[in-house]
Amino acid sequence: MYDVLHTPGTAGEVDGLERIERRFTGARGGSAPTAPVWLEPACGTGRYLRVAAGRGRRVVGFDLSEEMVGYARARLSRLGHARRSRVFVGDMGRFADRVPWRVGLAFNLINTIRHLESDKALRAHLAEVARTLSPGGVYAVGLSTCVYGAEMESEDVWDARRGTMRVTQAVQYLPADAGDRVERVVSHMSVRTPTGGRHIDSAYTLRAYSLAQWYDAIAGSAMRLEAVVEEDGHDAPAPMSGYAIYILRSK
Ligand SMILES: C[S@@+](CC[C@H](N)C(=O)[O-])C[C@H]1O[C@@H](n2cnc3c(N)ncnc32)[C@H](O)[C@@H]1O
Image (tube, rainbow, N blue to C red; front, side, top):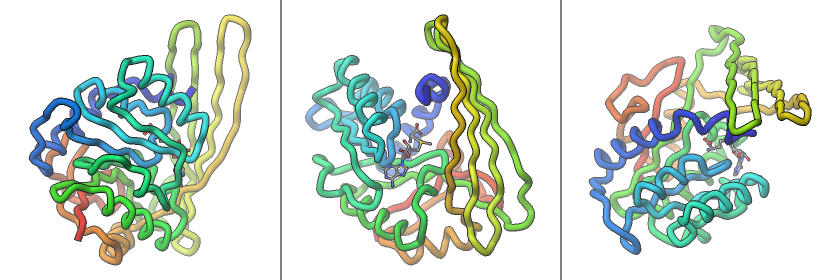
């Protein structure tokens, strides 16, 4: 269901990642076994990895969820990418030993890094990413910063079909306060197929960062900030409130 909802638009996002790769790693392609390597921590269904593998990259991904990993691996394999891909069940806190190739571009988009619940967990994660990178490698982190007390409750709605399945999801974002730094995300999803339908409610939390907190967290880690870009890879001012992609390099 996640893949049905979120795959549309993925190829365009991978165009942006390719521009980031060209601009910050200098990679110019190559064929397996020397093809550039992309790593996605918390890869979910592997929607980015499938497109990247189809465009000649070797890809590595991992996720806490066995179901997500099973789906990602099966789709990569069905597309003929088994040899150029590795996908495993793993935690963002500890994974570097299991990454088989040195990585040119690691990436973590749409606020997924905010699943890490503390600065300590973020530092451990960035240290692990730094261990996987080749000397010219970078980590592209897509994250929204916030201004405490000024954020409004907001909602996104997605609607998508694949074959005979239709999935609709409404997601509410309940802003964090400066004290607990916990944003609540509440999801209402409905799935319809010719044989019936069901409704699934769920909720999770994301750690909130002001821009200053995010910069402090990077400064205390194994990585340093090299640039701030938009999804298309061009420079952007770092927003006090809103989404940007932060390009990090090992110190
Ligand atoms: C919003 S999904 C993003 C999936 C994928 N990156 C994408 O953009 O399609 C967030 C994913 O993070 C995974 N996740 C959350 N915490 C994690 C952790 N500590 N280590 C690994 N994966 C984690 C979840 O299982 C889920 O698949």
